[in-house]
Image (tube, rainbow, N blue to C red; front, side, top):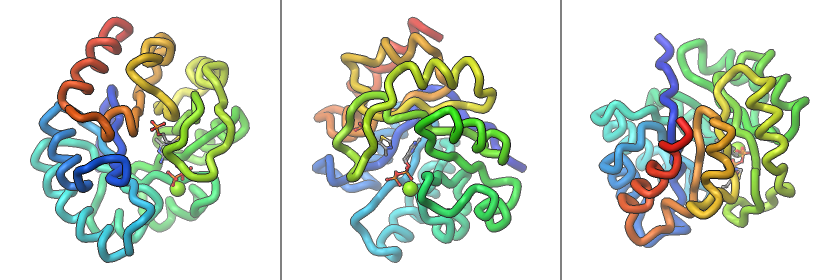
Length: 210
Ligand SMILES: Cc1ncc(COP(=O)(O)OP(=O)(O)O)c(N)n1
Ligand SMILES: Cc1ncsc1CCOP(=O)(O)O
Ligand SMILES: [Mg+2]
């Protein structure tokens, strides 16, 4: 059966922005109470990614944390992740659905209303909404879409929305004000000296709005 996607902070691995490896990062995220984690890794071989995902899948299961794999459907299926995240240039949603079946959640990156509506009609389980602000975390990133696009999605799109891109503790309240189901901060969390402390600060800010 398909698992319900937890609301709240959505974390993504990024070991090239940290002194720790992805598995160590995930352990800290789990200890901080994060309930939804995406494995995103652009520099490793398929085999290296598979090995890290196998370990992370076991960890996330023991913490009842929703685990999503970015890009690699084969790895997602192999480790029985709860979800797969796909971008506009990845395998199209309808093709991915045939492969992963009905029980695995599919998240789709969107940057404009047309993409958000198409993902919804085609049965996405959630959409990424961004980049809200400028970000240097992702190579070849499009320009920031701004809070206007988040506002559009919150009003018109009924499936869960993950606000992402350039979100920091300093601008988090400007995003939380719109109450998307999930908010994702990548480098602000993974690159921080103390992940637990940063997450606690983020939760404090968000709690005022939910
Ligand atoms: C929650 C979420 N939103 C957007 C993205 C970006 O996905 P994509 O466009 O496929 O780019 P890469 O992450 O693969 O570089 C995401 N990963 N997660
Ligand atoms: C993977 C991804 N997709 C859209 S923005 C982004 C990176 C966001 O990283 P940060 O929170 O460090 O700006
Ligand atoms: Mg992708």
